Image (cartoon, rainbow, N blue to C red):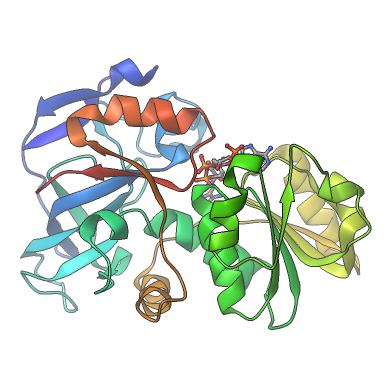
Length: 315
Ligand SMILES: NC(=O)c1ccc[n+]([C@@H]2O[C@H](COP(=O)([O-])OP(=O)(O)OC[C@H]3O[C@@H](n4cnc5c(N)ncnc54)[C@H](OP(=O)(O)O)[C@@H]3O)[C@@H](O)[C@H]2O)c1
């Protein structure tokens, strides 16, 4: 099969389009014919060697790529919930394996693909939307009527965060740049901030939840615009975030938290419901073919993608 392989850490040039053997599945795994995958910033962070210290299976050759959507072509002996021919989506564990024509996927990291999405659209959902869901629900305990600000509302995580927060009945403010105001408004937010013109941390509006999806504003900066029992959640675990997380956890009042996405079928099924009932949709900024993956990584590394980058594999 064709796959994108890396033999060393480095710039986007290390992504090589090669022939490799089909993956062998374990008893609890599915072999999936990957129709589409997508790019998440973690993919190029792993490629650059930035996450070596996490020991994500640092062995070369390595196939990256977490998000996938495709068709089940083989099931392991212990698989109970899927059958050959099922159309599924999900994410494989880091460092990945989805930048390929076939991938071995844990049964509990997949769900049936939303019926109203193409493979290409579905492949852009898992990691970004699960991060948004788990930040708002698990970390911030979002409730109807709360005021939620999403910083980086035009990014992969942000587009899902604003829609999930609206679906939970929150009043949602999205922070983005001038060129993305229309996009963020089209996702149903109640209010927008253009970060090139205004600084939400200097305003006198307070929020129950501030989700810094793009990890650009610290808890220290945001705390004065959090309500007395407000929660700040970030996607990046800097030493400062971790320390703030520890000390705010033991004190009454404003909390600093960190989300670490965990792919599971239950949350994917919940996202499927939100998508099939029209509450959540994806936004695809650009689509590339598998052999163009280096260009897709370079685009993601700009950190200015409006929405998601999709990779088309099978026709
Ligand atoms: N902890 C976890 O489990 C987890 C999971 C997923 C992602 N992440 C991390 O979360 C971060 C965001 O991921 P992502 O997929 O959303 O990234 P992304 O799609 O690459 O984010 C790009 C978006 O960020 C916006 N942006 C850039 N600078 C901004 C600023 N100063 N203020 C507000 N918006 C800004 C850009 O809009 P403009 O072009 O208008 O600036 C663009 O739309 C990454 O660091 C990623 O590694 C962590």
